[in-house]
Amino acid sequence: MKAVILVGGEGTRLRPLTYNTPKSMVPIMNRPFLEHMIGYLKEHGIDDIILTLCYLPDPIQRYFGDGSKLGVRLSHVVEECPLGTAGAVKNVEECLNETFFVFNGDIFTDIDLTAMMEFHRQRGSKVSIALTPVDNPTIYGVVETDAGGRVQRFIEKPSPDAVTTNMINAGAYIVEPEVLSYIPRGQNFTFEQGLFPLLLERGDPVYGYQSDAYWIDIGTPEKYLKLHHDVLMGKVKKSFHGERLGEGIWVEGGCDIHHRAELEGPIVIGRDSVIGSRARLKGPAVIGRYCTIGTGSFIEGAIVWQNTRLGRGVLLKNCVVAENVVIGDRCQVAEGCVLGGNLIIGPGESLPQGTKLWPQNSA
Image 1 (cartoon, helix red, strand yellow):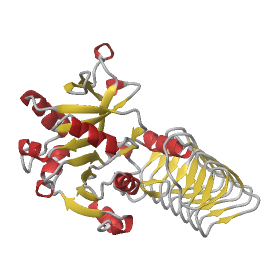
Image 2 (cartoon, one colour):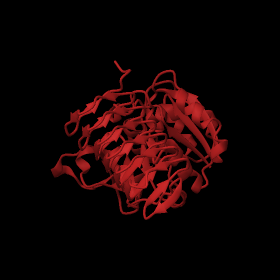
Image 3 (cartoon, rainbow, N blue to C red):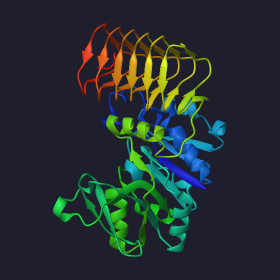
Image 4 (cartoon, rainbow, N blue to C red):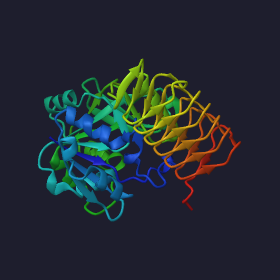
């Protein structure tokens, strides 16, 4: 079974984390987001995958190659200019001669794709759209369906008094190849505002597959942090790399954890990291590979990327710190802070809640 994953976006809402890193490569539990997604597709028998690339394609191509190390076949197609969600799929039309999946490259979910395909085939649908419920549909595009699941209309960001459903487009589709003929070649064209309304206008069958499975998009640093907390707290099933040292504590090889350090799970610690004396780590938290946590530092609810060094007595709370960051002694990084890569924070600095710092080498 084939799938197209749309990973060409710039991830501007996720900055500063995506200034030098494509969104699909930001780490989730110390592995690229896209690696988790590919593993999820493989569980449902989807092992022939096309990646549509545009922004910073090289890191993705270098890391994943032909997909053989993950047990799938990967093809990479780089767009010279952004073509939109539907335009990107039209660009690989010659590879799509049977029913296929399409996924936005920023969703993390465990929707049952096998059941969704069965739903699609039973109804003879041209396009099936995965739908997920949200608490506040006014900030999304909602999808109205009839009792049988057939889509009636799309409403973009309805006002509170106009909300008729809390079901939104979850960014996962099953598509019959013949509908690609409606997409103009070489133009920026979207599923959401272009193809789907056109299909409804023509009377072609479009269905919504409703699921209350776990779903989140990682479009903002707040959601990126929430995803980690949800995974660590068991809201979505995931296996963790490393050896289990205690209740909710996973440690990869080569780590040096001082016997006076305190670890309270759930925590994941990447390989070859050093945790100093009297350092305290309180989950849900992730420490990347090759990190150093200095004596007496306290980390609670934070996500720390690889090769980052914390001095003595550093405090991190519910924040995200990217790769190659040096944080001096006695620094405090408050809740909601997001630090881009390659930064140096001097000793004694205190970053107030919600601070965002761009990478050192950014404009």
